[in-house]
Image 1 (spheres, rainbow over the protein chains, first blue to last red):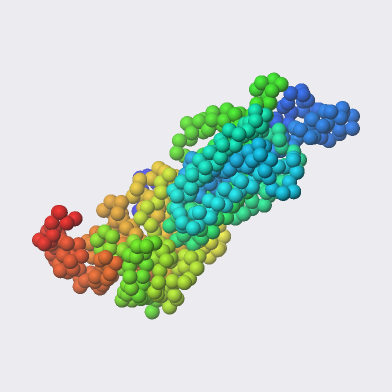
Image 2: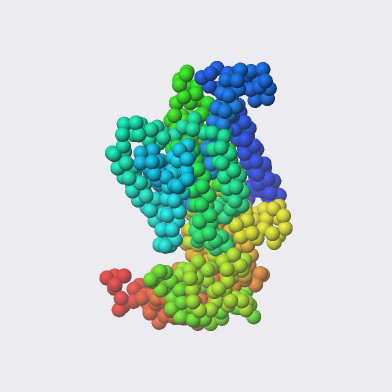
Length: 357
Length: 268
């Protein structure tokens, strides 16, 4: 029934099956390319730093540390490597959380922090830093991180509860989230108003976000959480794709949207709360990582989710390397650099591929 | 007989019941049933309740199986619902959108491999007449083209009960005829029960085996178009003066002369 004049060989049925297979191969290749970019970014991040250790020194410290100065080995193994891995993991976690959030809320401006996670985490950190309030049995080292996690995760659970009680749609969820942002911001401001100069400085530094807080236990925990969450995300990929076409349509295809939303928000909560607890607030990557992935592979979530994980990881890792290289001897807050790296890349992709799937 | 039987069905929205205790004559399989009625008569609500998207009380029997308490995923294997709109701002190709319907419903297991799912999706696009759009992004399509994609998404799953909510509202004359012809043919060939919401009485009279007319959530009429569509019914339900005539081909023609004499612009 199509106009015969507009037909090309590709529009024959066999041609279409072949074209679809090519599309799948192209998207798989893009995901593989992003994985390779992550490796390159990790290497760059590892060989960049104020101590001037180049790639040969880094390799030696990693694989044959016997002949090196203990200080250099320490720098590579205990500072650069965990920080570089933390950059990859935080970028992956925030970008994955951002993609799921944007799909769930049907809103391209959503990020893991849209619903007040960062504000809640800041409040938790403020309680620990200024008032010394935390859960019983938590040591000094973990106090701020645990508090930030508890409040970030708790805020999203509260949101889930409100949403379920009210049987709310996406618009109401966002409004609840905005209400939480204002409530927690007000509480943080209150605590700031009664804090000392030193405490205030500590709190402001915490909210800036820094990979230098990443230690091996943090890397292990975040890696474990990603390993737990990613398979569930991938399992839900087809349902998430269906949800992009509308809630009614997804439900009529047999998708249990209520359960999908609950499970997805739980994953987002875990990823965002853990990241923010360990490195503070790094906002931009959770918004832009998903968009870069979407522009590269479209919205079939079987490809979009892994592409988001990898694009976020690569973006964060490159930003981490740049944060050490831009001003010699100074490590800039990585959140600033994610924006500096992400915005030009983002604009380049928008102008290069307008509306293309 | 594989009929759709609706008995004492009540459904609606939170604190706003729309349909109460609706009972319809059995709607047989292999036929197209046009669901007619004025705005807010409960047509889309009925369709959404049949699809399991709204809570319902009463009985919906399809080929002897009760649908009301059936889990959504089970029901989705038997019933397909095509909503009025398909969002345009989604970065998926037409072919991916149709294949996605099979994947989300876990129905791709039925035809076999992924390759079969692709083949089935391509075949459905050809049936609907949009195979030339297969590799286009949804964002580049017109409203009418998106409506055809939406139809293909519904048809690809080969349901027993096909629910179409205004499937031709954005289509030109050619595609209106083409879609209704396709739906009628598939109903006959595959033994589907088709319930389609329409506003165009002419199309309903031309292509449906039976019309079901709702007004304020209640059944106003049900039967073959030539019998059910009467000037009295149209005056009562739509508040218009209309004549029912037969053309030289013997088909029912609905001629609307204007608003019913007892009805004015002020009452719209």
